[in-house]
Length: 186
Ligand SMILES: Cc1cc2nc3c(=O)[nH]c(=O)nc-3n(C[C@H](O)[C@H](O)[C@H](O)COP(=O)(O)O)c2cc1C
Image (cartoon, rainbow, N blue to C red; front, side, top):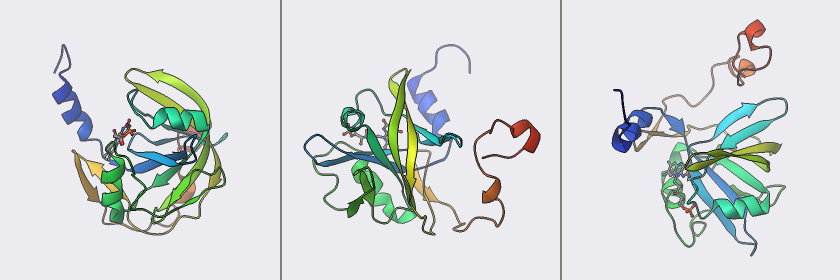
């Protein structure tokens, strides 16, 4: 397809890119927990440890995260569809049905998540109708085993596999500076 991109075609094409689902959470100026479901999360750099996520410019949650200066990325398990659905739409009390405890920054770490990453806001880059937020990872949780929640073609799904293939994870990270030499991802 060439020429002008129709929004529906664009959504349909991008929907074929399967992702995990996170909840990016922080504490607002009143001391209340806030957060939103986010699939645009990615590992960015190992050294320094950077990640990114992309909140829409109309997000009500993002200004609070920006003001807080720190956030916790919760990687959802396949048992947390309901959590994703609550955090995936605007609502008054998204935290009513989920237990959480403060990560070292104070940002909410959700019970039941496969793992979480506590981060500080490093920089914000313009990304069209979204912001590209780069975060510096300050604390990592001990991951628990389980299957991740996936989002594909507008629906939730899950992998068959719960455990990593032995040895593969050791070589996993984004295109590192010596990628051409080692030919490994992360
Ligand atoms: C699976 C899933 C993934 C989402 N990923 C994103 C995302 O990457 N960026 C974003 O801005 N919104 C994303 N959303 C939508 C937001 O979660 C939703 O618009 C937000 O919770 C609205 O509340 P807020 O305005 O209070 O932030 C996603 C929703 C779902 C269900």
